[in-house]
Length: 87
Image (tube, rainbow, N blue to C red; front, side):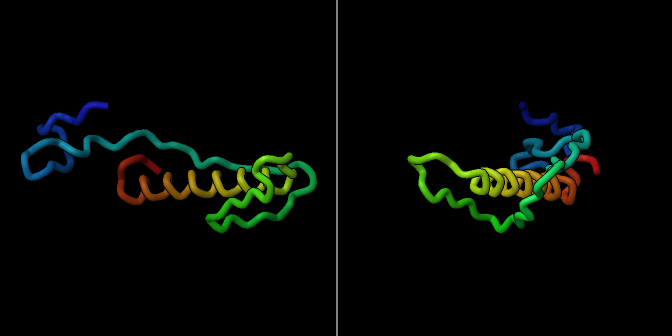
C-alpha cells in the first residue's frame, strides 16, 4: 500500500508526507460458534501447547483458536477506535 497523497491525508509527518488517508471499509469481527460441546474457554492472551512434538489435544487447539479470534477482534476494535476503519 502506498502512502496517501498529502492533499487527501488526515495526518502527515513533520516532512509533510501523508500518513493516514480516508477511512477504510468496515471489517466484521470474527465469530466462533460451537454447535455442540462448547468448552467454555476464556481468552487470556496465552497459548500453551503442553507437548509441542506430540499430538495436540482438542483442548489445546480450541484454546489457540479462541486466543487468535480474541486478538484479531482486539486489533479490529483498535482500528475502529482510531477511525481507521468504519464500525
